[in-house]
Length: 103
Image (cartoon, rainbow, N blue to C red; front, side, top):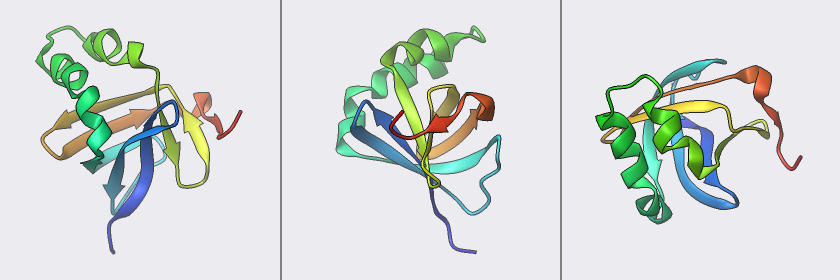
């Protein structure tokens, strides 16, 4: 099966990157992260989150950026954790907190 984008990472209306996987799951999955040029402006927050030793390091460093994931079915959520290591990603989200795009 061909890998395809299943989610897009946004900061407000600015596209920061795409998540690609051949087996996206409804609650999270391993993926390839394809950053846009605009991702460079927030890369430092993701690197700091990975370097942190506390469990809440992602929320502390990345949560304040007000990012959202938009899925291929149009739903959007700000309740997610995206761990990056190079172009590899592990992403999980709270489907209960997802809402339709544009709300």
